[in-house]
Length: 219
Image (cartoon, rainbow, N blue to C red; front, side, top):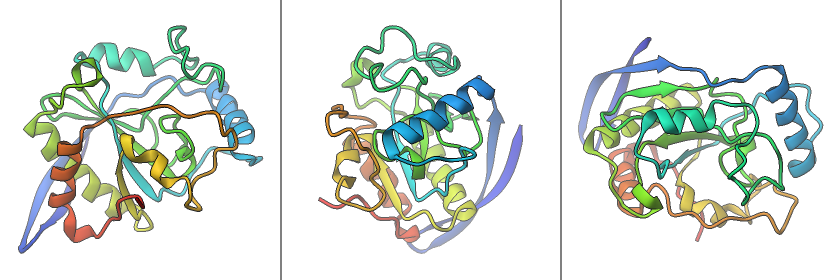
């Protein structure tokens, strides 16, 4: 378990919080790395030697599944599960995320946060993904106060670690980035409709990290 001291800023208050991150790696061996390189070539038109990214965006999700174990099991395999018919045509590479936050606020790191994860169309090559357990039925705005606190701390930590991060977004906002230089998707027919992690949750996180001056996507 990694324990860090993160300096958090709110409007007029400076305080320190001990941020605990538990390493719980998904399967990310040679095969998944090669599949990721192929995804980058197919969807972004880039031939790369490795899958390292320069993070510019933090993007928040919900899992639409209330169980941590079931959510983790979905991301763990290297290949996409058979029920993801909505995105399987784009690649057999499994979806992934850099972090996952449980209902009680526990933060898990699933993979290196400077490797590309498949979690958002068009923006994977510059984006760190944070999954939150919740969003029951992909509708309920039911993320917890503990998750809110952990997301706020994690955003501060990531901005401190990667100063070039400039955007903070919810998954439901991803298509607003299509006219920016960070959008790379070559397949114009590859889009999905998202509602996570809920507008109220995003509003609450943004208010708490206002001092970081992270941008929302253009409207």
